Length: 346
Image (cartoon, rainbow, N blue to C red; front, side, top):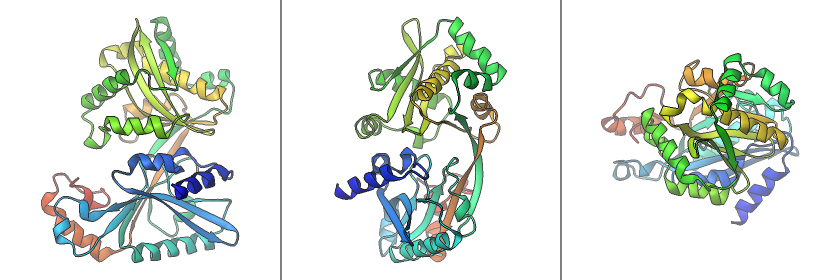
């Protein structure tokens, strides 16, 4: 508990850059069932690099426990964004030394692979791209809230403005709550959306996960509900701090698509954040570049497209290949592009 408090205080003190909510111990603790939250700190010459991640035991993968003669681990960023973050602007030499130090640490701790989801606004992939494998995998949309309400509206795509007005004309209203008062409605709509889109098991977060959000992230989440005739027809969970607002999880009842409730919902969420001095609204991306979901989100910020990068580092090639060979029989889907490949059987 004391280490967690120190972690939180460290994040509170950082101002250049301001860390996102994903860097906080409360957020990382949401995923402690899949990995142990840890914060690695590297200091050099009065500067510090902070790196939060989840430490996962590979032996717990199906069928592997009896085949391995020692405990093995891998690490990943929690769902969302993350990666190493520096206090200030260290030069290349410090980033190189950090990477070498962390690689040695991984060797000592039997950490086989490392997967990083970099932050699209913090751009923390750039200083590491010369030292570890970094790949652009997609794009996300970011709405800049450092402008007036009129400027935000004028920046929307024409069809988006039309759809927002349509929702208003149809009598749709948006309710924004800082408590989970209508959580049951949210879950019904969220599960309905997952089923309709044939989403993977990963996205079927259980009630305990959301209860952790409600308790661990008090004052850092809102629910936005689009309502029609006394019922909720579109609902979204958003996470935030003083700088960033994230469209996190949500959905819309299919029969109400023609009313465009989610357009109005996101518009009202943006204005809510802007009125509180939040600087950026991260809407996320699509399932692939330029698909329908991405184009919809881009209609809120046509000039706000940012590349999303990941890092894929193998710290023990021999053992990584062995793990792939041991899990091949359990793989049910194509593993090309999945990292690490031995976890594709989950």
